Image 1: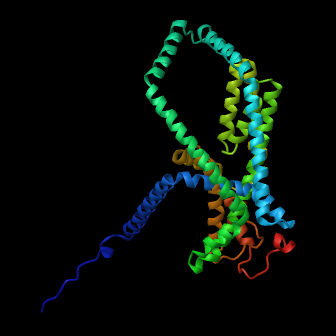
Image 2: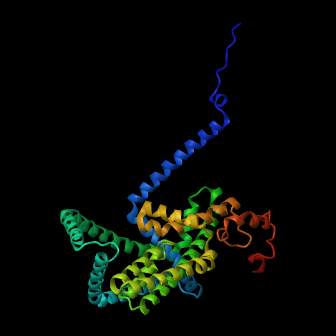
Amino acid sequence: MVVEQKRASADEVLPRGVRTAGAWAWRFIAFIISAYLLLRLISLLSVVVIPVVVAILLAAMFQPAAAALVRRGMKRSLAAVVVLFSALILVFGGLGLIIRTFINQLDSLSSQVSDGITEVQKWLTSGPLHITDDQIGQYVDRIQKAITENQGALTSGALSTATTLGEVITGFFLVLFTLFFFLRDGGQIWSFLCRLLPREARVATARAGHYSWHTLVSYVHATVLVAFVDAVGIGIGLFVMRIPLALPLAALVFLGAFIPVVGATVTGAVAVLVALVADGWVSALIILAVVIAVQQLEGHVLQPLIMGRAVALHPLAVILAIATGIVVAGIVGGLIAVPLLAVLNTAIRYLVRHPSGEPTPDREPPGTEPAEDDDAATDERPKDPTDPPSAESSLANA
């Protein structure tokens, strides 16, 4: 009698932990490859993707105004045109004022910068560093030599700048057209995209997008308010100290504040540097104190009071998102990293709690309370979606 010995399978030989790790490993590798291919595709289509993303952020800013006009009886197309042209007038009017101020103060700034550089040279020679005039001359000669040796690179950089300028103009008009249709047909566009999904995922995806959009609108409005307070606070300090280019520097602070934590700090440092070169150490220290005071106001009052109501993100998550965005896509990546994280935070937390697509009991996005309160918040919510909400919810009080 011949007994056939059965060959052991891999599932029987390998420990369960190894099999589990292997299953996770190939899925993780597939995820990394998919993410890399997606980033490569976005990079190839950056001329289109970046304007669309900017248009989405602008639509989040201006959509409430367009919706208010529609509620008052205005046609959707006309409301979108009115909001769009109002925004253009506001932006170009502000840019014109800033450029005019810069041109008017350029001559006086040049002389002040020359005097400031002379004072810095005197401090380098007579200060604690004891750098001689010959050493300063050597450094200047090295810089001039480096510029001469890299004229080819500078020329190619100028050509690259011309190409970039063409892309910026193209992107500007693409933003305008995309923003118009987002303001006019944003809801219909999202409904169309959801209908492309399998039937089982349509309702949950549509409602997750609805809550995510409200989170994005709240985030953008809160960011604009925080940036405005930063710009006004630092701008008042620059005007009081009579620092040149106070208005352009305040505008720079406003734009930089759209990158949380990092932006306002970097642009504030630029203001301190201009004060140092143009007006000396005393003015620079005073402006530095103003920048620090405004940053403390933002960090301890504005962020918890205003931004905390829009979206709850851990500071570490914000910093890592900004760093990753800057590494992947430069300044644009740093600009969109936090709103993207906020949208994903709301969508994922909603889908985890409501996979079948039922609305939240209080009709509020689930990403506005800290993550550590999720368990307590979940315990207070009805277990059955058909049960009435608690008396404390906004739905019951509506």
